[in-house]
Amino acid sequence: MGNDNGVPTGRLGRFVKLAGVGARASVDMLSKRGSEKVAERAAEVLGNLRGLAAKLGQTASYVDGFVPETHRGIYEKALGALRTAAPHSSKESIRALVESELGAPVEKLFQSWADEPFASASIGQVHRAELPNGQAVAVKVQHPGIDRAIESDLSNVSLLEGFVGVVGPRNLNSGAVLEEVKARFREELDYRLEAERQAQFRQLHAADPMIAIPRVIRERSARRVLTMELVEGATLEEAALASPALRQRYAETLWRFVFKGNLVGGMFNADPHPGNYLFQPDGSVTFLDFGCIQPIAGHRLEAARDLHRAALRKDEPAFHRAAAVILESKGGTYEAAATAYSRLCFEPVFASPFRITQEFASSLVSEIKTVKDQLFAKDKSFVQLPSGMLFMNRLQFGFYSVLARLDVTVDYAEVERRFLSEAGVL
Image 1 (cartoon, one colour):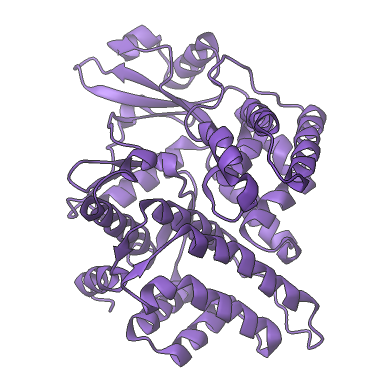
Image 2: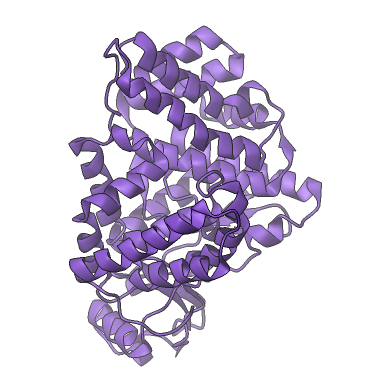
Protein backbone atom coordinates (compact mmCIF):
# COMPACT_ATOMS: atom_id res chain seq x y z
CA MET A 1 0.00 0.00 0.00
CA GLY A 2 3.04 2.25 -0.04
CA ASN A 3 2.78 3.67 -3.57
CA ASP A 4 3.01 7.38 -4.40
CA ASN A 5 -0.43 8.87 -4.81
CA GLY A 6 -1.95 12.33 -4.87
CA VAL A 7 -4.89 12.84 -2.53
CA PRO A 8 -8.26 12.88 -4.34
CA THR A 9 -9.92 16.12 -3.20
CA GLY A 10 -13.17 16.36 -5.19
CA ARG A 11 -16.29 15.80 -3.12
CA LEU A 12 -18.17 13.83 -5.80
CA GLY A 13 -15.23 11.57 -6.65
CA ARG A 14 -14.57 10.79 -2.99
CA PHE A 15 -18.28 10.11 -2.40
CA VAL A 16 -18.54 7.68 -5.32
CA LYS A 17 -15.50 5.70 -4.19
CA LEU A 18 -16.74 5.57 -0.60
CA ALA A 19 -20.19 4.47 -1.70
CA GLY A 20 -18.65 1.63 -3.66
CA VAL A 21 -16.62 0.47 -0.66
CA GLY A 22 -19.68 0.62 1.58
CA ALA A 23 -21.84 -1.38 -0.81
CA ARG A 24 -19.25 -4.14 -1.28
CA ALA A 25 -18.47 -4.34 2.43
CA SER A 26 -22.17 -4.48 3.35
CA VAL A 27 -22.74 -7.41 0.99
CA ASP A 28 -19.60 -9.09 2.33
CA MET A 29 -20.81 -8.77 5.94
CA LEU A 30 -23.96 -10.69 5.02
CA SER A 31 -21.97 -13.71 3.89
CA LYS A 32 -20.89 -16.38 6.34
CA ARG A 33 -17.26 -16.04 5.35
CA GLY A 34 -15.56 -12.72 4.75
CA SER A 35 -13.79 -12.08 1.48
CA GLU A 36 -10.12 -11.12 1.68
CA LYS A 37 -10.40 -9.40 -1.70
CA VAL A 38 -13.25 -7.17 -0.51
CA ALA A 39 -11.37 -6.28 2.68
CA GLU A 40 -8.17 -5.54 0.76
CA ARG A 41 -10.07 -3.43 -1.76
CA ALA A 42 -11.68 -1.47 1.08
CA ALA A 43 -8.24 -0.83 2.59
CA GLU A 44 -6.87 0.27 -0.79
CA VAL A 45 -9.68 2.73 -1.50
CA LEU A 46 -9.78 4.18 2.02
CA GLY A 47 -6.00 4.47 2.05
CA ASN A 48 -5.88 6.30 -1.27
CA LEU A 49 -8.62 8.67 -0.13
CA ARG A 50 -6.90 9.32 3.21
CA GLY A 51 -8.54 11.99 5.39
CA LEU A 52 -11.66 11.06 7.33
CA ALA A 53 -12.22 8.03 5.12
CA ALA A 54 -8.90 6.51 6.19
CA LYS A 55 -9.66 7.33 9.82
CA LEU A 56 -12.81 5.23 9.59
CA GLY A 57 -10.72 2.37 8.25
CA GLN A 58 -8.17 2.80 11.04
CA THR A 59 -10.95 2.60 13.61
CA ALA A 60 -12.37 -0.56 12.06
CA SER A 61 -8.92 -2.16 12.11
CA TYR A 62 -8.62 -2.33 15.88
CA VAL A 63 -11.85 -1.40 17.72
CA ASP A 64 -13.48 -4.57 18.96
CA GLY A 65 -17.15 -4.86 18.05
CA PHE A 66 -17.04 -2.59 15.01
CA VAL A 67 -16.71 -5.47 12.53
CA PRO A 68 -18.73 -8.69 13.07
CA GLU A 69 -16.75 -11.42 14.83
CA THR A 70 -16.96 -13.72 11.78
CA HIS A 71 -15.14 -11.14 9.66
CA ARG A 72 -12.91 -9.45 12.23
CA GLY A 73 -9.67 -11.25 11.43
CA ILE A 74 -9.83 -10.54 7.71
CA TYR A 75 -10.73 -6.86 8.04
CA GLU A 76 -8.37 -6.23 10.95
CA LYS A 77 -5.48 -7.56 8.88
CA ALA A 78 -6.40 -5.68 5.71
CA LEU A 79 -7.22 -2.35 7.35
CA GLY A 80 -4.36 -2.46 9.85
CA ALA A 81 -1.96 -1.04 7.28
CA LEU A 82 -3.92 2.23 7.31
CA ARG A 83 -2.44 3.03 10.73
CA THR A 84 1.15 3.45 9.52
CA ALA A 85 1.44 2.28 5.92
CA ALA A 86 -1.26 4.13 4.02
CA PRO A 87 -0.38 5.22 0.47
CA HIS A 88 2.11 8.06 0.59
CA SER A 89 2.60 11.24 -1.40
CA SER A 90 5.35 11.70 -3.97
CA LYS A 91 8.79 12.82 -2.83
CA GLU A 92 8.61 15.85 -5.13
CA SER A 93 5.34 17.11 -3.64
CA ILE A 94 6.56 16.48 -0.08
CA ARG A 95 9.85 18.31 -0.64
CA ALA A 96 7.99 21.23 -2.20
CA LEU A 97 5.63 21.45 0.78
CA VAL A 98 8.48 21.29 3.34
CA GLU A 99 10.40 24.02 1.54
CA SER A 100 7.30 26.19 1.25
CA GLU A 101 6.43 25.80 4.94
CA LEU A 102 9.97 26.21 6.32
CA GLY A 103 11.26 28.73 3.79
CA ALA A 104 14.47 27.01 2.65
CA PRO A 105 15.67 24.06 0.55
CA VAL A 106 15.50 20.66 2.25
CA GLU A 107 19.30 20.31 1.92
CA LYS A 108 19.82 23.48 3.99
CA LEU A 109 17.19 22.60 6.59
CA PHE A 110 18.49 19.09 7.20
CA GLN A 111 21.90 17.44 7.07
CA SER A 112 20.24 14.34 5.68
CA TRP A 113 16.73 13.56 4.45
CA ALA A 114 15.12 10.21 3.56
CA ASP A 115 12.70 10.66 0.67
CA GLU A 116 11.01 7.34 1.47
CA PRO A 117 8.69 7.81 4.48
CA PHE A 118 8.86 5.22 7.27
CA ALA A 119 5.19 5.78 8.17
CA SER A 120 2.16 7.18 6.38
CA ALA A 121 -1.36 7.58 7.72
CA SER A 122 -4.59 9.50 7.14
CA ILE A 123 -3.29 13.07 7.29
CA GLY A 124 0.48 12.94 6.91
CA GLN A 125 3.58 10.85 6.46
CA VAL A 126 6.81 10.71 8.47
CA HIS A 127 10.39 10.97 7.19
CA ARG A 128 13.70 10.27 8.88
CA ALA A 129 16.14 13.19 8.79
CA GLU A 130 19.10 14.71 10.61
CA LEU A 131 19.45 18.28 11.77
CA PRO A 132 22.63 20.22 10.92
CA ASN A 133 23.97 19.26 14.39
CA GLY A 134 23.55 15.56 13.57
CA GLN A 135 20.49 14.93 15.75
CA ALA A 136 18.14 12.28 14.33
CA VAL A 137 14.60 13.54 13.92
CA ALA A 138 11.22 12.44 12.62
CA VAL A 139 9.55 14.94 10.29
CA LYS A 140 5.79 14.65 9.92
CA VAL A 141 4.53 16.26 6.72
CA GLN A 142 0.92 16.64 5.66
CA HIS A 143 -0.15 15.00 2.43
CA PRO A 144 -0.43 17.83 -0.10
CA GLY A 145 -4.11 18.52 -0.68
CA ILE A 146 -5.26 16.77 2.51
CA ASP A 147 -6.86 19.97 3.81
CA ARG A 148 -9.15 20.12 0.77
CA ALA A 149 -9.86 16.38 1.03
CA ILE A 150 -10.91 16.68 4.66
CA GLU A 151 -13.14 19.66 3.89
CA SER A 152 -14.77 17.51 1.20
CA ASP A 153 -15.30 14.76 3.75
CA LEU A 154 -16.67 17.18 6.34
CA SER A 155 -19.24 18.43 3.82
CA ASN A 156 -20.30 14.83 3.14
CA VAL A 157 -23.08 14.45 5.72
CA SER A 158 -23.41 10.67 5.30
CA LEU A 159 -19.68 10.13 5.86
CA LEU A 160 -19.65 12.47 8.85
CA GLU A 161 -22.66 10.73 10.36
CA GLY A 162 -20.96 7.41 9.67
CA PHE A 163 -17.99 8.49 11.78
CA VAL A 164 -20.31 9.67 14.56
CA GLY A 165 -22.07 6.31 14.34
CA VAL A 166 -18.78 4.57 15.10
CA VAL A 167 -18.45 6.25 18.49
CA GLY A 168 -22.08 6.75 19.45
CA PRO A 169 -25.63 5.99 18.31
CA ARG A 170 -26.21 7.58 14.93
CA ASN A 171 -29.47 9.11 16.23
CA LEU A 172 -27.50 11.10 18.80
CA ASN A 173 -26.38 13.39 15.99
CA SER A 174 -27.20 17.06 16.33
CA GLY A 175 -25.84 20.19 14.75
CA ALA A 176 -23.65 20.79 17.80
CA VAL A 177 -22.23 17.26 17.76
CA LEU A 178 -21.40 17.42 14.06
CA GLU A 179 -19.76 20.83 14.50
CA GLU A 180 -17.66 19.39 17.33
CA VAL A 181 -16.43 16.61 15.03
CA LYS A 182 -15.60 19.15 12.33
CA ALA A 183 -13.68 21.33 14.79
CA ARG A 184 -11.54 18.45 16.07
CA PHE A 185 -10.59 17.28 12.57
CA ARG A 186 -9.82 20.78 11.37
CA GLU A 187 -7.55 21.22 14.37
CA GLU A 188 -5.60 18.15 13.30
CA LEU A 189 -4.53 20.07 10.19
CA ASP A 190 -2.67 22.67 12.30
CA TYR A 191 0.63 21.18 13.38
CA ARG A 192 1.46 24.37 15.29
CA LEU A 193 -1.43 23.62 17.62
CA GLU A 194 -0.33 20.00 17.86
CA ALA A 195 3.19 21.15 18.82
CA GLU A 196 1.75 23.22 21.68
CA ARG A 197 -0.33 20.32 22.95
CA GLN A 198 2.57 17.92 22.67
CA ALA A 199 4.62 20.28 24.85
CA GLN A 200 1.77 20.48 27.39
CA PHE A 201 1.53 16.69 27.66
CA ARG A 202 5.30 16.44 27.87
CA GLN A 203 5.33 18.88 30.80
CA LEU A 204 2.43 17.12 32.56
CA HIS A 205 4.24 13.75 32.49
CA ALA A 206 7.79 15.08 32.85
CA ALA A 207 8.36 13.39 36.23
CA ASP A 208 7.11 9.98 35.08
CA PRO A 209 10.00 7.81 33.81
CA MET A 210 7.58 5.38 32.19
CA ILE A 211 5.95 7.98 29.93
CA ALA A 212 8.03 9.42 27.10
CA ILE A 213 6.90 12.16 24.71
CA PRO A 214 9.30 13.34 21.98
CA ARG A 215 10.51 16.95 22.11
CA VAL A 216 9.31 19.14 19.24
CA ILE A 217 11.98 20.98 17.23
CA ARG A 218 10.22 24.33 16.90
CA GLU A 219 12.62 25.88 14.38
CA ARG A 220 11.86 23.06 11.94
CA SER A 221 8.09 23.05 12.44
CA ALA A 222 5.20 24.98 10.88
CA ARG A 223 1.49 24.59 10.17
CA ARG A 224 1.96 21.57 7.90
CA VAL A 225 5.38 20.29 9.05
CA LEU A 226 6.15 18.93 12.52
CA THR A 227 9.70 17.92 13.44
CA MET A 228 10.50 16.06 16.65
CA GLU A 229 13.05 13.76 18.22
CA LEU A 230 13.22 10.41 16.47
CA VAL A 231 12.09 7.59 18.76
CA GLU A 232 11.69 3.92 17.91
CA GLY A 233 10.03 1.07 19.75
CA ALA A 234 7.87 -2.03 19.50
CA THR A 235 4.38 -2.02 17.99
CA LEU A 236 1.29 -3.08 19.92
CA GLU A 237 1.32 -6.40 18.06
CA GLU A 238 4.89 -6.99 19.24
CA ALA A 239 4.11 -5.79 22.78
CA ALA A 240 1.26 -8.29 22.96
CA LEU A 241 3.86 -11.08 22.72
CA ALA A 242 5.85 -9.86 25.74
CA SER A 243 5.83 -11.51 29.17
CA PRO A 244 2.76 -10.99 31.40
CA ALA A 245 4.80 -8.82 33.79
CA LEU A 246 5.95 -6.54 30.98
CA ARG A 247 2.46 -6.34 29.49
CA GLN A 248 1.16 -5.37 32.91
CA ARG A 249 3.61 -2.47 33.10
CA TYR A 250 2.59 -1.37 29.62
CA ALA A 251 -1.10 -1.39 30.58
CA GLU A 252 -0.45 0.55 33.79
CA THR A 253 1.53 3.16 31.86
CA LEU A 254 -1.19 3.52 29.22
CA TRP A 255 -3.89 3.96 31.88
CA ARG A 256 -1.84 6.55 33.76
CA PHE A 257 -1.11 8.53 30.59
CA VAL A 258 -4.77 8.66 29.53
CA PHE A 259 -6.48 9.35 32.83
CA LYS A 260 -3.85 11.62 34.36
CA GLY A 261 -4.17 13.66 31.18
CA ASN A 262 -7.96 13.74 31.66
CA LEU A 263 -8.24 14.29 35.41
CA VAL A 264 -5.10 16.24 36.26
CA GLY A 265 -4.17 17.93 33.00
CA GLY A 266 -7.74 18.66 31.91
CA MET A 267 -7.21 17.34 28.38
CA PHE A 268 -7.53 13.98 26.73
CA ASN A 269 -6.04 12.56 23.59
CA ALA A 270 -9.06 11.41 21.60
CA ASP A 271 -7.12 9.38 19.02
CA PRO A 272 -5.97 6.23 20.84
CA HIS A 273 -5.13 4.08 17.84
CA PRO A 274 -2.21 1.63 18.22
CA GLY A 275 0.11 3.44 15.83
CA ASN A 276 0.42 6.24 18.40
CA TYR A 277 2.21 4.03 20.94
CA LEU A 278 5.79 2.72 20.92
CA PHE A 279 6.58 0.12 23.59
CA GLN A 280 10.02 -0.02 25.21
CA PRO A 281 11.80 -3.02 26.84
CA ASP A 282 11.62 -1.51 30.35
CA GLY A 283 7.83 -1.18 30.32
CA SER A 284 7.81 2.49 29.37
CA VAL A 285 5.75 3.76 26.44
CA THR A 286 6.47 6.55 23.98
CA PHE A 287 3.36 8.49 22.97
CA LEU A 288 2.93 10.11 19.57
CA ASP A 289 0.32 12.26 17.83
CA PHE A 290 -1.40 15.03 19.77
CA GLY A 291 -3.54 16.38 16.97
CA CYS A 292 -6.98 15.40 18.33
CA ILE A 293 -7.20 16.75 21.88
CA GLN A 294 -10.47 17.44 23.72
CA PRO A 295 -10.14 20.02 26.51
CA ILE A 296 -11.84 19.31 29.85
CA ALA A 297 -12.33 22.34 32.07
CA GLY A 298 -14.45 23.99 34.75
CA HIS A 299 -17.44 22.10 36.13
CA ARG A 300 -16.94 19.34 33.52
CA LEU A 301 -13.47 18.58 34.92
CA GLU A 302 -14.73 18.51 38.51
CA ALA A 303 -17.64 16.26 37.53
CA ALA A 304 -15.20 13.88 35.80
CA ARG A 305 -13.11 13.76 38.97
CA ASP A 306 -16.25 13.07 41.03
CA LEU A 307 -17.06 10.20 38.69
CA HIS A 308 -13.64 8.59 39.13
CA ARG A 309 -13.55 9.23 42.90
CA ALA A 310 -16.93 7.53 43.27
CA ALA A 311 -15.72 4.54 41.26
CA LEU A 312 -12.61 4.26 43.43
CA ARG A 313 -14.84 4.23 46.55
CA LYS A 314 -17.21 1.78 44.84
CA ASP A 315 -19.98 4.26 45.66
CA GLU A 316 -22.70 3.38 43.16
CA PRO A 317 -25.21 6.17 44.05
CA ALA A 318 -22.50 8.85 43.92
CA PHE A 319 -21.29 7.46 40.59
CA HIS A 320 -24.73 7.63 39.03
CA ARG A 321 -25.24 11.19 40.32
CA ALA A 322 -21.92 12.29 38.81
CA ALA A 323 -22.70 10.54 35.52
CA ALA A 324 -26.06 12.33 35.32
CA VAL A 325 -24.31 15.68 35.85
CA ILE A 326 -21.82 14.98 33.05
CA LEU A 327 -24.55 13.77 30.69
CA GLU A 328 -26.80 16.70 31.63
CA SER A 329 -29.67 14.21 31.73
CA LYS A 330 -33.13 14.85 33.14
CA GLY A 331 -34.13 11.54 34.68
CA GLY A 332 -36.31 8.96 33.01
CA THR A 333 -35.40 5.92 30.96
CA TYR A 334 -32.68 7.68 28.96
CA GLU A 335 -30.77 8.71 32.07
CA ALA A 336 -31.08 5.17 33.44
CA ALA A 337 -29.71 3.64 30.24
CA ALA A 338 -26.96 6.23 29.73
CA THR A 339 -25.68 6.07 33.31
CA ALA A 340 -25.80 2.25 33.19
CA TYR A 341 -23.61 2.41 30.09
CA SER A 342 -21.20 4.76 31.88
CA ARG A 343 -21.09 2.31 34.76
CA LEU A 344 -20.13 -0.50 32.37
CA CYS A 345 -17.26 1.64 31.03
CA PHE A 346 -15.98 1.99 34.61
CA GLU A 347 -16.05 -1.71 35.42
CA PRO A 348 -12.21 -1.91 35.21
CA VAL A 349 -12.08 0.49 38.19
CA PHE A 350 -15.05 -0.83 40.18
CA ALA A 351 -13.91 -4.46 39.80
CA SER A 352 -10.16 -3.76 39.94
CA PRO A 353 -7.92 -5.72 39.50
CA PHE A 354 -9.51 -6.28 36.11
CA ARG A 355 -8.64 -7.99 32.85
CA ILE A 356 -9.85 -6.07 29.82
CA THR A 357 -10.63 -8.60 27.10
CA GLN A 358 -11.72 -8.21 23.50
CA GLU A 359 -15.14 -9.47 24.56
CA PHE A 360 -15.43 -6.71 27.17
CA ALA A 361 -14.32 -4.06 24.66
CA SER A 362 -16.86 -5.38 22.15
CA SER A 363 -19.62 -5.18 24.76
CA LEU A 364 -19.15 -1.41 24.97
CA VAL A 365 -19.99 -1.10 21.30
CA SER A 366 -23.00 -3.40 21.50
CA GLU A 367 -24.36 -1.78 24.67
CA ILE A 368 -24.53 1.59 22.93
CA LYS A 369 -27.50 0.08 21.12
CA THR A 370 -29.32 -0.17 24.46
CA VAL A 371 -28.86 3.57 24.93
CA LYS A 372 -30.12 4.11 21.39
CA ASP A 373 -33.33 2.25 22.23
CA GLN A 374 -34.14 4.98 24.74
CA LEU A 375 -34.28 7.57 21.98
CA PHE A 376 -37.79 6.37 21.31
CA ALA A 377 -38.90 5.99 24.93
CA LYS A 378 -42.39 7.27 25.67
CA ASP A 379 -41.27 9.45 28.57
CA LYS A 380 -39.37 11.81 26.20
CA SER A 381 -36.36 11.86 28.55
CA PHE A 382 -33.70 11.82 25.82
CA VAL A 383 -31.20 14.70 25.75
CA GLN A 384 -28.51 15.37 23.16
CA LEU A 385 -24.91 14.57 24.00
CA PRO A 386 -23.25 17.51 25.75
CA SER A 387 -20.20 19.08 24.17
CA GLY A 388 -17.11 16.92 24.51
CA MET A 389 -18.86 13.61 25.19
CA LEU A 390 -18.76 12.15 21.67
CA PHE A 391 -14.99 11.85 21.59
CA MET A 392 -14.99 10.29 25.04
CA ASN A 393 -16.77 7.31 23.47
CA ARG A 394 -14.05 7.17 20.83
CA LEU A 395 -11.52 7.05 23.65
CA GLN A 396 -13.34 4.25 25.50
CA PHE A 397 -13.81 2.06 22.42
CA GLY A 398 -10.32 2.56 21.07
CA PHE A 399 -8.37 2.62 24.32
CA TYR A 400 -10.04 -0.47 25.75
CA SER A 401 -9.46 -2.31 22.48
CA VAL A 402 -5.74 -1.47 22.77
CA LEU A 403 -5.63 -2.73 26.37
CA ALA A 404 -7.49 -5.87 25.31
CA ARG A 405 -4.60 -6.75 22.98
CA LEU A 406 -2.26 -6.75 26.01
CA ASP A 407 -4.67 -9.22 27.68
CA VAL A 408 -3.46 -8.87 31.27
CA THR A 409 -4.97 -8.28 34.72
CA VAL A 410 -4.16 -4.86 36.17
CA ASP A 411 -5.09 -2.99 39.37
CA TYR A 412 -6.34 0.07 37.51
CA ALA A 413 -7.91 1.52 40.68
CA GLU A 414 -4.54 1.60 42.42
CA VAL A 415 -2.93 3.26 39.40
CA GLU A 416 -5.55 6.03 39.60
CA ARG A 417 -5.31 6.44 43.38
CA ARG A 418 -1.60 6.97 43.09
CA PHE A 419 -1.58 9.77 40.51
CA LEU A 420 -4.72 11.45 41.89
CA SER A 421 -3.20 11.49 45.35
CA GLU A 422 0.08 12.89 44.04
CA ALA A 423 -1.85 15.66 42.29
CA GLY A 424 -3.92 16.42 45.42
CA VAL A 425 -7.29 15.77 43.77
CA LEU A 426 -8.21 12.43 45.34
